[in-house]
Structure formats: C-alpha cells, structure tokens
Picture 1 (cartoon, rainbow, N blue to C red):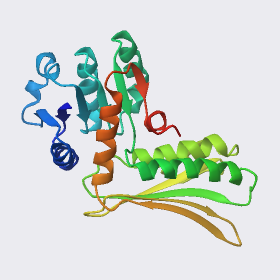
Picture 2 (cartoon, rainbow, N blue to C red):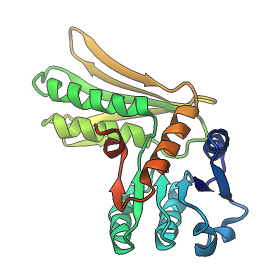
Picture 3 (cartoon, rainbow, N blue to C red):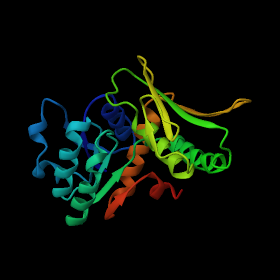
Picture 4 (tube, rainbow, N blue to C red):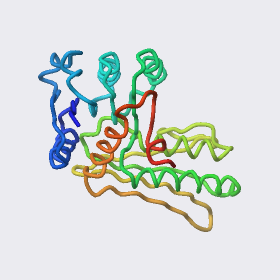
Length: 237
C-alpha cells in the first residue's frame, strides 16, 4: 500500500514502523509543521490515508481526503458531532471512510462482550453500571472515545439508562470517570455493583502496536470500497 499518514505523533510513527516492516510505502507524512502539504495533488498519490490527529482538525482532514478521492481511516475521537456531515460528504464523493474509536481487535471483542453483558444486566435492576477509563497524560479528550462507545452500547441495552455523564450522575444516567497517568496506553473497566457483589470486565492495552496493526488492517480492507465502515464491518461482528 501507498499510505498517507496524517498525524505524525506516537501513533503515526508506530503505524509507519509496522507498515514499513510489512513492505508498505509511506508517501506522505503530515505534522503540525507541514499541514500545507495536505493537498489534493499529494493525497492522490496514496492508495489510502490514515488519520490520527486532534478533534479540532480531524473533520477538515477527513473532508480533504474524501474530496481527493482517497479512502481514509480515522481513529481521532472527540469530533463525532460532525459525523453525519462526513457521512454525507462520503456519499457525495462516492468515497470510502472507516472510523473506529479503537482499532484494537481485542477491544472490539471487548465491545461485543460489553453488549452481551449489558443485555443480561437489563434484567437485573439491583446492579448499577459504571465505566472507568485510564489513559496517558497526552490524551486530550475525556472520556475516551472507547469509553463513550462502551457507554452508548450499555445505554442501548439497559432500558432504565437514558444518557451517560462524567459529572454527578442522576439515577437514569451512566457514570463514566477518567484518569490520566503518564505512559499508560489505555485501560477500560466496566463495573456492575450491587449491595451483595460486583461484576467487572476489563481491557488493558499493553502497547500502541495493537491499535496500529488494526488501523493498517482497516486501511488495506477499505481500498476499493465505497461507503462508511467500522470495525464490526471488517471483523464481521
């Protein structure tokens, strides 16, 4: 694959290292210092773009790739209020867009377990659900996109819950708490607490490589497709 990497931080560099080992070519690296190089002409030299940046610039980066006719994989979280607009732009340009709050295969298995457990706990009103997530200090958004995905899946399956909150919770709200600790790739804990016991499911990332490998897998899968996709499409889950 000829890959354009948009966002050349720790994740972008990890993606590059794995891609080069796989025999792929990195034809464009976009950092904060060379955003002027994110042009239609440069992008069109790539088979696919992979975008891990910041919430305030993600929408513009994705839009530019779609207008260039380049399939784009994005793992940036915190911008999803504009997702509907990106879906429309994808359709207008007959493009291909792949989004995941987390590209780890293990996390996506965790998502499936979370949905199954939530459906079971819907019949157990004596348990109170909560989520706690831990990430490195450089992660800007809180709660994490992964925690929000977990929370939305719980709310969809537990009918007494109407929304999630990171503030003081109401009885019909799911509480999501966050911590930022230096050099922590990411931990997500889903807990159900009652007066007599507690149930937890936990996913802990050991490094960024799992996320990077998943993003590259998604990039290869996306080439030649049209539409908007996610990990459940690629994994058939």
